[in-house]
Image (cartoon, rainbow, N blue to C red; front, side, top):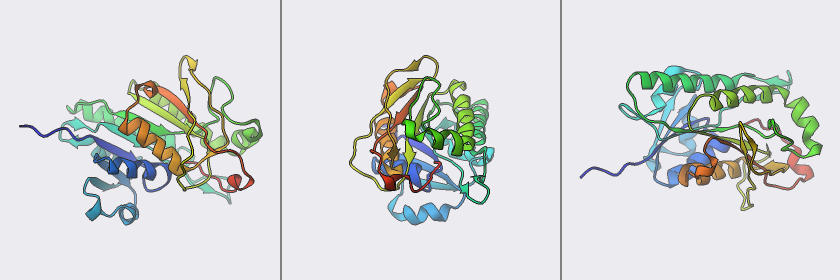
Length: 259
């Protein structure tokens, strides 16, 4: 008798925020998870290995083909079932820019190169790739409140340019994917609020519209785990989803997050 297949999910950028929330929920489901971290001790302190036997933490950088490739094999010759990438850059206030303005586009290039190299080496499989982007990028109309347009198109111009290239590379890759565009992220705290979802086809345009001010990172991660990893809802395959959730409050705009 053969053992039942246990899905394996590779995470890039799961040390905090959206990725960490999605990783926690995925682990609770019993799936095997592989997480690439520049500082493994940071994630191990949150998810101790002794209580998370299904989690494998690999040290490395998401811009390193060798490190990324090591995360993409569930077993020799077999690719993981899913990939979740929530990598991003930190804002440098003194320079009013990011510490790595091309972090997302480079990460996507390395991910796709790693998959190609592994397949050329005989590995089989077509993992579904989920990436975390942002609202404000739609080519088919406004997906942010009018009041937030100056913030998105002036202060966030650099990270948005990076994410546009990341999205384009994934859409044209031929891989199965879902692009997740959360609203402005203001908190780590998970809530019980409903996450409203708009769906956009990257070629044919919008299927539904949802516009909102903010969302917590944990709520965005929970949505990814529930709908894309655990349930694998087919309606989101090769689509872009926008996720507005919370109503505007003055306190919701105090902190700036890019991942």
